[in-house]
Image (cartoon, rainbow, N blue to C red; front, side, top):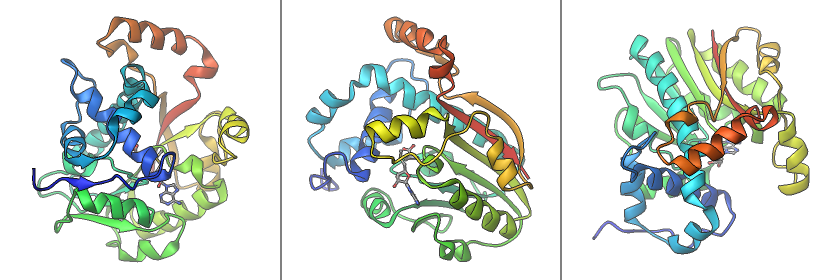
Length: 272
Ligand SMILES: C[S@@+](CC[C@H](N)C(=O)[O-])C[C@H]1O[C@@H](n2cnc3c(N)ncnc32)[C@H](O)[C@@H]1O
């Protein structure tokens, strides 16, 4: 195939590698007979990428872990689709997009512009896989840098989406980001997942403190940015009943029964 892309330089355990793992898990899940997410774009991406996926496969235990990723992403997709059905003209800001194919799968025909935003090194990787169009844009910047927001059209509705991102920046930085975004748009929704207070505690032990903060109920966000009203939340593992493999479904059911595990990562929806 002529359009193979070379990812062999991606370093083990780098941010780029983490994104490649997530893409790999979504692609893996799409090959099930009855997938929950069914991300065929991810499967196509993985086929085009030149990388040692054998080693990654052994490290990831995809037969079990594919569902954690699929359940979370499917919930994000459903919440986003519901908003975009009501506001097809909305600007979509997909923050910390990584290598997620959402912008290619979900963009509303003739809808508003879609911006995929991530750190410059991740966007550089992404650009090897996909191209911009008039309505689909990629911005390589830290979300905490105020400059990128100046590129966005002002006013109108906005859908702000952050999957697996906002726990990596401090709560003060999240608040500053949200102030800037809400100053720029007239109305909208924020859909984001946050870890419980166990997140930063575990991270101090296992991941050198990468996780900056955690929340019991998502209310810190409304306190930090009072224009945001919390309207709903659910554990990322909600919907595990749809797991099509019986052993994995049982495993997720057992985990879901433990409050600390069930509540570890939750998706929150806010309106303004
Ligand atoms: C766990 S990955 C999730 C990626 C993607 N949302 C997904 O679900 O596949 C976290 C992403 O957040 C990005 N990220 C972390 N800090 C960031 C920042 N300050 N600005 C922009 N992106 C950031 C990382 O580069 C990475 O792509």
